[in-house]
Length: 336
Image (cartoon, rainbow, N blue to C red; front, side, top):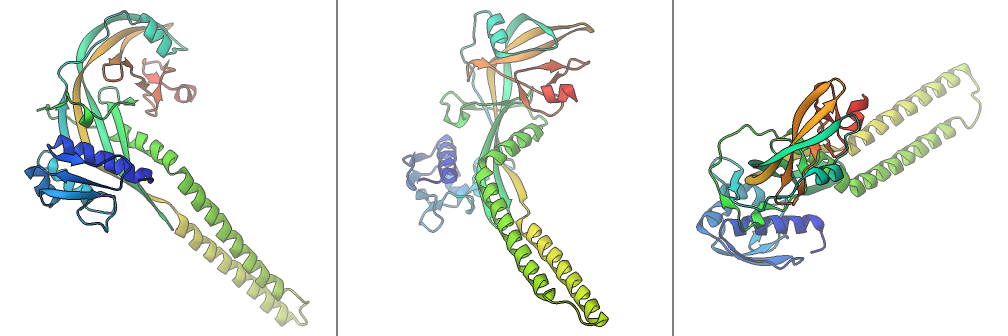
């Protein structure tokens, strides 16, 4: 399995099916596998209890691809009438040593002085978003993106998939408003990087086709201007012909732009809400105009301090500026 999109689909399908109680045998980097489905999974996927798995839609069995109905049907394996899967981890190791040195090593605070005032265990909710995204133009680009973030701070994190965590259990979490905007921003950044080659190839084709158009219509104008007009009427006809050629070139150029315009779509496929232990580290922020308290989190899954999110643009930051209201900012927003 050389296609990275197919590999991500395979990994997502294996994790989801195993979490739903299915037995899955699908070797990594192989195009086909096998599964014994739980009754819930079989009903949701409209599949027999034993089935082949494949990333190729033309194969027999269950097709796991962006072009198949797998993602839509998989929603039936999640809690009824929602695409949200709530999980919890009851216990994790929490750092016991002082956090002054880790904070100083991890963060920079150019316009403030910071003092670590203490750290206390807290249960924190993390969100793991799965997005199906596409860029449609003269060609199509599709992929599956995953974004993990701290639901409290909005900071985007690099965390292991909780569907692979044997300590994660189904939970009955309180209903809460979910802000998808930080995840969408992060997914857009991921998409730009992942689709860079596709976009570059599309732009190269656009430039090539535009050059061909200009060359073709320039040749038409050169043929018309090959000799001097013998009469005033012929000169007017030639001028009208030139205007018509230029208008047609402009129309064709606009058609090309429309043909190559990128039309992105982003659809949330699933959200995993994970409640897990973390350390809430209290920082005392001192500036000339006053002082305030903020919190950063030591993450027990990554065993490191989490970044903050810029209050202006949402960017993940370790170099933290503060505005007059002690809102964390990135350097760009602080300079604006």
